[in-house]
Length: 129
Image (cartoon, rainbow, N blue to C red; front, side):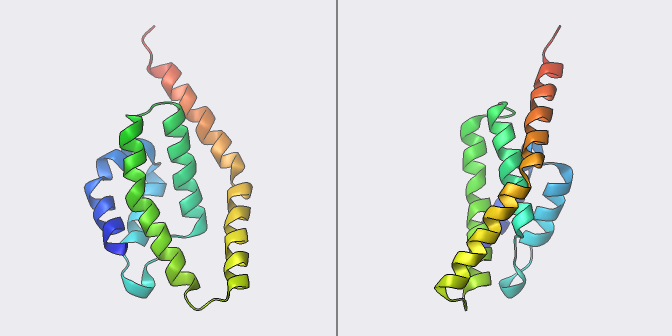
């Protein structure tokens, strides 16, 4: 899963560049190219990627099928990151960890709203008058 995420970030950089913010792409690249136990995709980065992808999907910033397929390596990377993080955890600890992720999704809703609105404005400004 780690290798698939790393390869995906390398191979799909142009696609990611079309819908991820520059900072998100830099952070993704930095975190994904760590190996073994150092490999990690933090909650806030994962949430930003998902929210930016959702806004891009909504406003058709690129072909929707390509966008969705490009998320597979990111999902595999996030899954690997989560597994590495909770390998030694008990079931209640894993549940608590999932709840923490849910709280980040909730806390970052203003970021989603900002991305949603910005993507819509870009589309309006891109249309010929």
